[in-house]
Length: 133
Image 1 (cartoon, rainbow, N blue to C red):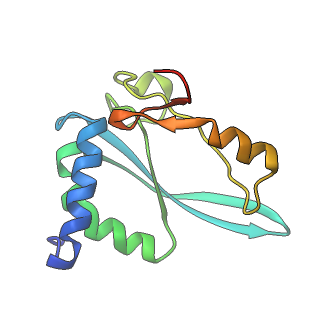
Image 2: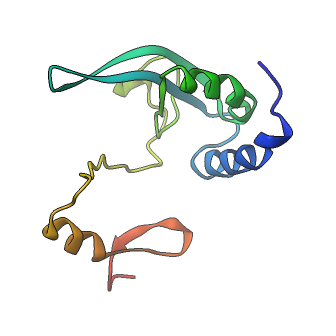
């Protein structure tokens, strides 16, 4: 893999900090490189490649991941560490992170705008309804 260039150093620091927040250095992270497109009005996707990297080696992989992204691979990661090179529930080592998939339309409805304004991000980056601490 290519070393990170000087122009990528600030991105590398951000990725290192982000990964360090979610994972221990020795954790195994699953990455899915997925191509997406629209065909006959329907969203389609296909997994191009699956990778499993140790958390402390992810930053060194950034140039390669960037190249793959530039040729159409959207890069997704498993939010919880894996015990092995698998993608099933039994391959999850521990569940440290709770996640939610949110789809935000280009023109959100008034209801969605109201609901999103009722959430706040607290110290440490945790989101919860406003008024709860």
